[in-house]
Structures are given as C-alpha cells and as structure tokens.
Length: 155
Ligand code: CA2
Image 1 (cartoon, rainbow, N blue to C red):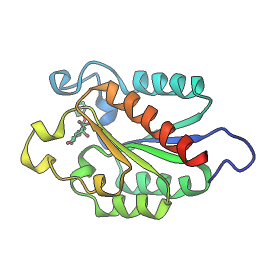
Image 2: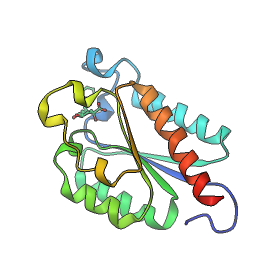
Image 3: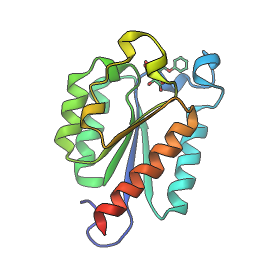
C-alpha cells in the first residue's frame, strides 16, 4: 500500500478516450456536466473523506497504461471509466491487474441498456465492483465505494 506513514488514502481517477468531450457533445446520452466539473466534485468529496485524489484523462491507450503502471507505487486504489476501451482493451485490463490495486469501474450510461457490444467489459472481471447508468453520480458512488473498500482493508 502506498501510504505507509499515515492514514490518508490516495485515489487515482482514470478517464478513457473521448471523455474530454463531456458536456460538449451527445448530452442526451452523457449529460451536460463537463469532465472538469466531475473532477472538481470528486476532489472535493475525496478531501472531505481525508483522501488525496489525482485525475487523469487521455485519448491514448498507452498513456493510460503508463499512468496505471505508475500508480502501483503512488496510489492505493483506482477509480476508472475506461470509456470505449472497456469493450476492447486486453492491455488496459493487464495493466490494472499488474498494478495490484483495487479497481472500481464506472460508467455514466447504463451500458447494459445499450448496444450488445457494450455488454462485455474487459475490466469488470478484475474490478472490486461496477457502477453504471447514473451519470456523474456513478463517479460519486464509485468513489464512495472504493474509499469504503480501502478503509475496510485497512481495519
Ligand atoms: O457510459 C460511459 O461512461 C461509457 O464508458 C462512455 C463511453 C462508451 O464507449 C462506453 O460504452 C460507456 C464513451 C465515452 C465517450 O464520451 C463522449 C462524451 C461526450 C461526447 C462524445 C463522447
């Protein structure tokens, strides 16, 4: 665990490809909230809970994998919306496994109410849990669940 000397937990939030467009396109599916607003709210919730939070978005699979590899030594858990890579990336799954960190997967939309190709996730099987379908609230619920999981493991 990264925090050997104090009780504060470090959470890495990962946003996959195209999520930088949130609030600017397809609001009927993904809502009007921007990614910056989601990150600001998560940072505030984490602070209230006494946790440190770092958020990272990229449209490049390799950069996401690099950041997850780094997290092994500087984070205690990962909250991730892998976006389209959810349904395609064995490499992202492998990086999450290699990090040996607890992972919570979140989705804004209910992927099971959408096209069949969105029903399979390469991440869900290695995640502690999945939150899908609640818009930006999915991130808040996922963060709360991840912090709760990490605190249980500390006890
Ligand atoms: O519902 C989710 O959070 C998804 O992870 C979003 C992905 C989609 O491929 C997954 O099946 C479910 C798509 C992210 C694209 O985000 C956009 C945001 C605004 C405008 C266009 C795309």
